[in-house]
Image 1 (cartoon, rainbow, N blue to C red):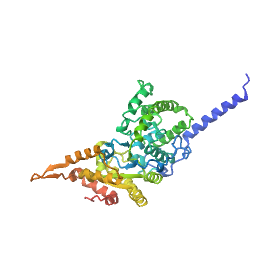
Image 2 (image 1 turned 90 degrees about the vertical axis):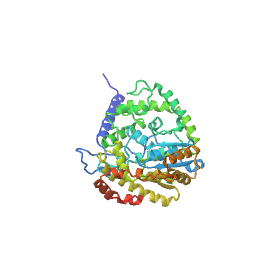
Image 3 (image 1 turned 135 degrees about the vertical axis):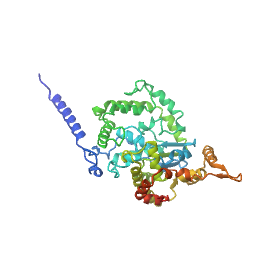
Image 4 (image 1 turned 60 degrees about the horizontal axis):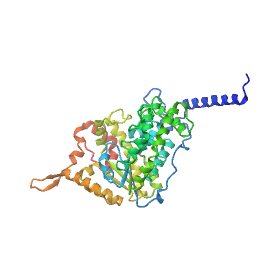
Length: 447
C-alpha cells in the first residue's frame, strides 16, 4: 500500500511535536535565586520555560489617569492576621464602594492551577527562606489585572476571581450578578460536581489537574512551574493533552459566567470608590501601579509582627516555609515587612500625600479617630453606613468611670495580649531578628 508524502510528513510533524513537548516538560531552566541546595532531597525548582514576556490572555494596560476623576481608587496593603478584616469594614460597609478582597490570590490560582489560599509568606519566600524570584508573567499578570479591577474593566479578569463567592468578590456589588451566575452555570458540570453549579465552580475544574499540579505554592515549586507552562499553553490555544479537559471546563465556566458580567460591571462603574485589599502585593508592583495611575492612593495597615505570628499559630495558618514554627514565622515576616517599609518609604517621597500608614493597635484604641484620619487622607466624605459602624465600635469602648463619667476603655491590654502568652525566650529571639522593623514602626522592644 502506497503512503503519500503528505501523510508521512504529517506523522513526522506529530511525532516531533510530541518529542518537543516531552523534552520541554523534563528540561527547564532553573531560577537564578533557587539554584542553592535546600533541605529536601532532589529538590531543584526550575522556572517556567515559556517566553513569559509574552504572557497569554493579559488585558491591555489601562490608563486610569483619563478615567473619571470623581472615583477614588485605593490599594489597601496589609498582612494576614493584621486586623484587615476589621479595618476593611471602613470600606466594605460603604454601599458606594466596590471592595475587592485578596484578588491576587485568584490571579495566582489562575496562573498556576492551584486552589485559593496561597500563604503570603510562601508567595514571597523560597524554601531557603530567601526572597523568591518572581517570573515576569506573574508580575505582569498581577499589575495588569489589578489595573483592570480598579477600572471596572472585567472582561479579561481571571475566572478564578469572577466566580469566587467566598472572600474575593465585593459584598454589596454582587446582589444581581451572583443569582445570574448561579442560573447560567446550572448546566456546567465540572469533574467533581456532576449536579452543576457550586460556590467554587471554577475551583472544581482544578480537580482535573490535581494529580499534576500542587494545591498550594508551598508543596512543590517544580510541579508548580511545570503547570504554569502547560496552563500558558492552554491560553495560547495549544491545548496540551494532559490539560485538555481542564481547558474545556474553564472555557465553559468562562463562557457562561461572562454573560452575567454586564450586571456586575454596572454596579462597579456606579461606585465612587474602588478598593483592592491584598496581603500578597510586592513593593515593585505597588510602585508600578502608583506610577501608572496618578490618582491611586495606598492605605498600609500594620501590626506588631509578634502579635501577627502568634495569631497565625492560634488560627493554624502558619506558612509552609516557617515549618509550622511561629518564631520562624515572625522572623520571615519581619524580612518581608522590612522590604515593604523600604519600598514604601521611597514611594512616600516620590508621591507625597498618597500613602498613609495605620496600625491595628491605634485602630483598636480609637476606631472613630482612625476612620476619620483615613477618610480625610482619601479626601472622601464618610457615608452614614460607615459612621454608624464606627459609632457602634466606639460604643463598645465606652465604660462608666468611678464618678459616673463616661470614659473609653484602655485597649492596650487587648491589642498587646500576645505579650502575656509569648515565652520571654521566644520574644528575645524575635527582637534580635526584628529590631529594625519594630523600631521603624514604633513598637517597644520589650524583653
